[in-house]
Image (tube, rainbow, N blue to C red; front, top):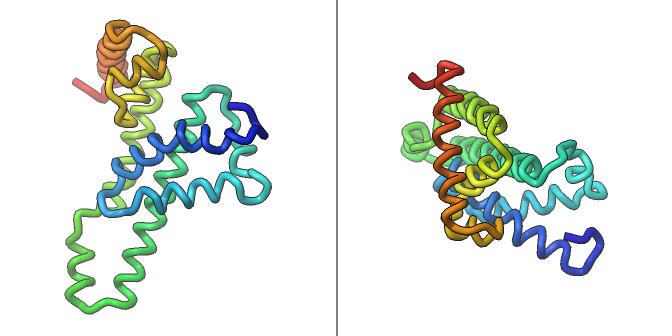
Length: 179
């Protein structure tokens, strides 16, 4: 992607939309992916691209994680606003429905974040190619799509995936997260 080129923005959207949609689907079943994607894109260009300038990582995977985490916080913010609006303007039946909804409680959200951080730390210990495959799988890509994206043979990608899963299991066992 060449910064300042006429196609840079469309390349950015093509590259990172799967990350955004995968994160939205992972953290909420009832929010509009397009709405959240637009909020993230706006965040990217606001204040002379401050969000993009604030990224301190040095790899594409780290940037995808940055996009994913930001998307997750946008989802949580929208869910919180939706619940507050429902409580403010709805009947008692609707308030009861929102309390009994499938949305995770703050404790469940905290546990989810803790698990996510632990898993991310474990993933970061993998070799680069294994890490890339795992991140792409987490975003919903198939092994075949990953093979095409990484310009590597399908069997090589399958091997990286298999080794990554074994290594992750061993790392998580070593850290006493798995038994």
